[in-house]
Structure formats: structure tokens, C-alpha cells
Length: 362
Image 1 (cartoon, rainbow, N blue to C red):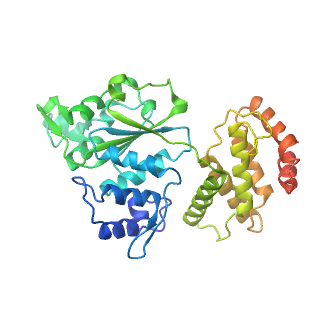
Image 2: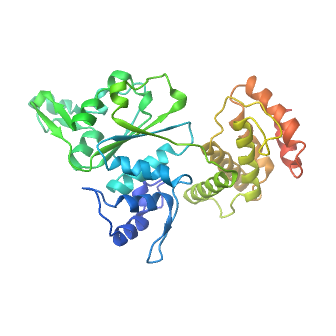
Image 3: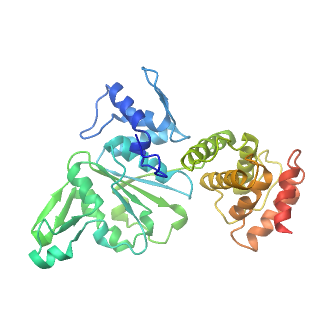
């Protein structure tokens, strides 16, 4: 039972009952050191109903084949790279894949521009190093090293934010499945079950491009935006409800109509045309991802809860909506004003949203 005071428990704790039910009913062959078979991992991610009646909640809404390709990759000697624009559930999927395959999602390296090679390989306890010299007791293993020793999946977030020379520390790990420790004249050899899931934001393309040698060690899966309006609405609705539970907001979910309106706005501005295809629109520079839609609805729900009557209305959504769209005060504001006047103003039943958004701009 996860600690109810923790804002966001790891996947293996939040969904422990589902994972246990899947393990109990899983009769298919498992790759070495996997806690579930590839088919059961896919069921955990995509959702379904088990023979004992247990309902598995979908963790990802989208192409089942895409998830099957990702899971199959982890069963080979190729690492997995999930790429896409911000908000396409790369981190979410990588966490749940690691939890289902290895039973833990905590072997994590967060990529940053200042990341050192030690974070991918190993470091040293300098007090012991000075006192004893190089020794196994002075060694501080990285999450990647621990995953190799334990035969588990390690996660690397924002791989393309990591400097190129540090990225290349992974080449030997991924190709030879060995991590040399020259200071101790030894190495760590990966156990069966070891693999790496990395994520990369394709908006960062060109920041720290992967070398061709490193890219060959990954199988790349592009995470798309939701294909349909209803699919994206379902994602936003479910995630907002989960966030509301963790924040202990009163059980008054945002009306589905408000969610559908917001998702429609995001999709139209993102695609540069209305949903019916009849009108072309200027697209702002912001990504307007599903994750941002979730944030806008959650903020509106919190505003309605703490400063209103608990019912989420257009006025509660408008403030966060404008902030999500208008990142550039010149170009984005022009696109947003044009959309308000040519689309929102003319849409039947959207008068309250138009007035709320205009009030913030005046």
C-alpha cells in the first residue's frame, strides 16, 4: 500500500495490485530476469481485463503496435529510445515499462547539460578513496551500473541534453555489455535482463545530437500526439482525475465539456486549422501538448476549488489557457487574438470562454 502522503509514488507502488494480478495470471514465457512476459507488459501499458476479472487501467492511449515494438526492443540487445515533442508521454511510458519489466523504475539518470560521466558510469566516495585508495568499497555505482549488476532496466531522461562526450560513455555499455573500471583493473558485466530506456525531446534536435555510433545502439520509437480528439480528451480526463486524487482536491471533476473545449483549442492551434478543416489558423510557437492541457485543467480545477464554488468554469480555465498558448508576447499573442476573434467568438456555446479570455487581454 503506497504512502498516501507521497504526491507521486513510483509506478511499481501506485499500480502494485495490477502488477501482482498480472504476475499471478501470466503463463507466457518471460525473458530472463523479467517480472512479466512481453504480452503481460503490453497489457499493463495498454489496459485490459484479466481472467480473474481484474481491470488493468490503460497507462497509454495510442497505438498498441507502437508499445509492442518498444517492449520487443527491450527483449533484444538493442536499447530503446523514445522520442517526440514535449508532452507525448515519453517519461510516463518509460517509467511504466521499467516497472513492468524489472519491478522498479527508480534506476534513473536525469539528463542535464551539466551531467558528468560519473552519473552514467560510477563515482567515488572521496573520504574512503583518500583513506583506502581505489577499492570496491569506495566505488559509488551509477543507476546504469546497478542495472547491469542486477539485470534490470535503467532509464535515462533527456538524453540529448547530455553533452556528447558524456553520451559516448554508453557506447561500450550498449555494444559490449561491459563497464570497465580501470582504477580497479576490473569491469562490470551486464546480467541478463539489463537494458536501457532513454527519452529525447525532438525540439532539442541539434543541442547534443547522438553520434552515429551511439544512435546505432538504440531502436528509436517516435511517440506521436493523440490521433483523435476523443482519444486526447480521455487522456486529459483520466490524468486530471489522478492528479486531483493525489492533491486531495474535492471530488468534483472538471466538466467533460470544458475538457473537450480546451483540447479542441489545443489541437486546432497545433495543427494550424480548425477540426473541420474549413479554416486555416496561425500556430503559436508553444507546443500545446497533451501534458500542457492536463496542467491547464488541473490549475483551473484548483482555482475553482479554492477560490470558487468547486465547479470548474470557463473563467477558471482562461488564465492558465492564455499562459499555455502565449509564450512569445508578440507572435503568440497575435495568433491567440486572431483565434479568439475568428473561431472562439463565432462558436455557439463558447461565449463564456470568449469573454473570460478577452477580459484577461484587455
